[in-house]
Image 1: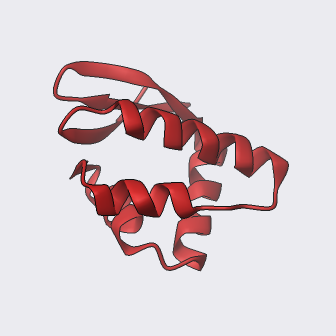
Image 2: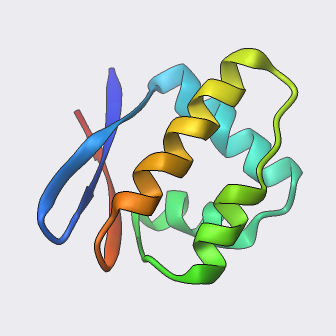
Length: 88
């Protein structure tokens, strides 16, 4: 299974596989990134500079997780007004 990000205009892009998303959430929890955690718990969030800054501050050491985080950063920057996670 995979997950995608959407915004007020619809589909923005593919985010991660189930495993990739699980690793991303665990990393955000370890780093205590409260806005990212809230986004994943709620399934959506307003796109704010605080949220984007948190996403951009994620710096995983794992090569696989780095790829997922980098993709998340790029997609989040493209989202208009709201970010919604969707099962793709």
